[in-house]
Length: 231
View 1 (cartoon, rainbow, N blue to C red):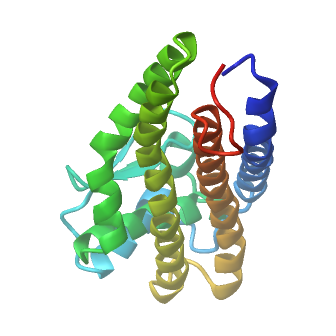
View 2 (spheres, one colour; view 1 turned 180 degrees about the vertical axis):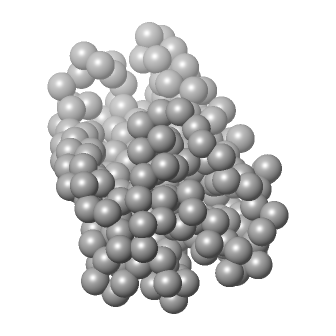
């Protein structure tokens, strides 16, 4: 796959979009990490306030190492925030923290798309690794059947990336609405914090596009697109 120019023709647009998304999210986060909120609350404090007002006092918030490694763990009901978010009072930090709190709210209300994404995690982890094994073996033995098996496994990865889109969009929508009603930021500050969330969403969109294009390449190598057979 790595020496096939057609792989780049298939996946190249997704890789370019991913690069643009990565640059944009870093630039946007860097810009608004320099803008302090009027309230002066840190990301951790903002998330705690939002969760408490929604009755989720049992959801823990703790720091975690890593640049923008923020996430919500539904198995332990824990919000984990990176150093750039946990202790910062910037609009960027508040936006990210409230977004992750939005995932906790999704979990508490039984948001169907989040449940679907969580259920897909084990299969996605296996499919992501297993698909490459089947694909490489299929390429080595010139077996379209093995390549197709890899494509079927990778389809789970594609499904996960697509299901992730409404989950992330909804979490951001909840964050935007509740950070204002909770008095964490003003309406104008919410718009600025929302720009960070919009940039972050582009990374998920790029991941979904890249995954879909990779699956199409697998199907092409298996001979199911364009009448192509692996040679």
